[in-house]
Image 1 (cartoon, rainbow, N blue to C red):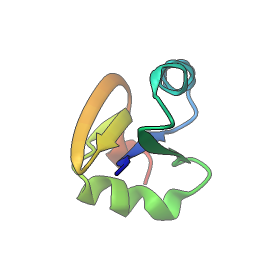
Image 2 (image 1 turned 30 degrees about the vertical axis):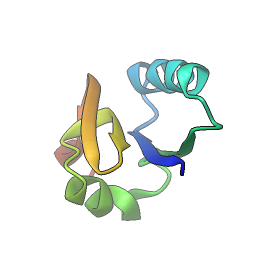
Image 3 (image 1 turned 45 degrees about the horizontal axis):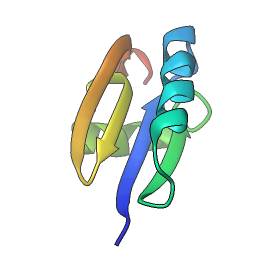
Length: 78
């Protein structure tokens, strides 16, 4: 069974660089990876908060939020 992962970001340079690296290292045969650009889909900010995301970029894997770097606080996005 594949793990579920969601990468949340806001489109800033820090986030885009992190996205590029995450996409490079994730084994898509083992992980179902979804990329969510919160600047383009602000309606999903509540979902990210509910998953424990406090700042982006962040990767949520099987319900655990992993904060990669600090690009922006979710509160600044909406």
